[in-house]
Image (cartoon, rainbow, N blue to C red; front, side, top):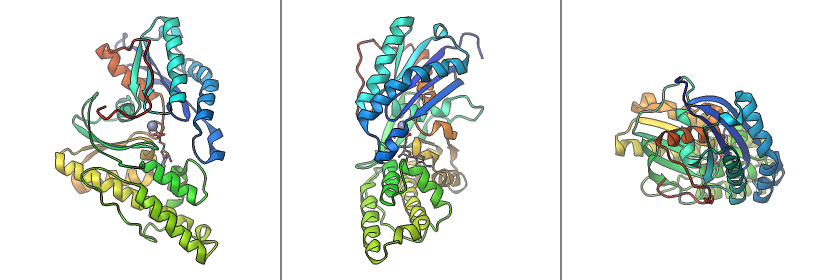
Length: 341
Ligand code: KG4
Ligand code: ZN
């Protein structure tokens, strides 16, 4: 690594994880994540509680990231911060902290879009091959479901998106109906491993083009379970693995149908996965199978970079640092996804 590679502090606070990471060039020196347990008892993220927890966590998390990286704050070249999309109160904690630190240290701020960062996590140097441009990226998280055509680090075209709920919400809602806990994705994933994925069938949505919809299957699952519970009080308990496996299979089928179509229509066979739902073992297997079935080269992030983390913010910051793209201090965060990202 050249001696002068910039040292970037990345900070992520868009939802319920407070995270700080240090990267030197593309090399990761630390990546600290404080997940907020408080939301579990409410079955979902409570925005006001999230911003309060970020306030408590942000200083110790940044401090921990610097210590683990063995970097002094005076050695930092810049701070990369998630500007949006996300919960405004949570974003404000990260952005305000960043402004203060940038002023104190006299170093620039780099704005990062959270969704762009999920896709750029593939470029963190882990000794693994990186996708070749242009590549398709299926970004699936608790808030978003998108197929992107990525022609360069910051040249991303939105080919398809969800018209209602995100894939992660479908996982979380399934778990909520079954009273499994929050976040539901990992719990469904675990149960699905011991269930029969073909025990139950739920209808696939008929949505035009490369867009997605997940509200329909959420509702059909809810009605199906409600009707079965009328006949047998223990229906969920007795069939939870089969229910989880069948819903997981359906969500993956929906995701894969449009991804295959996007690959056919664009002729692009470099295919990547990103976002929290890319931790799902069934989805990872389905994408990897595409190598044999469709001649794809596939790229799946290591587990620690699937859900929200600041290393992905720092890598996006690194590519902007190279371009000299910095932000004036009077910026405000944004809550909604920007259509052209
Ligand atoms: O990217 P992320 O950490 O936060 C957002 O930006 O939304 O994604 C969180 C989502 C949640 O809906 C969670 O249930 C889901 O990712 N998730 C999973 C798995 N691990 C996390 N969904 C399915 N299977 C998993 N193993
Ligand atoms: Zn995310």
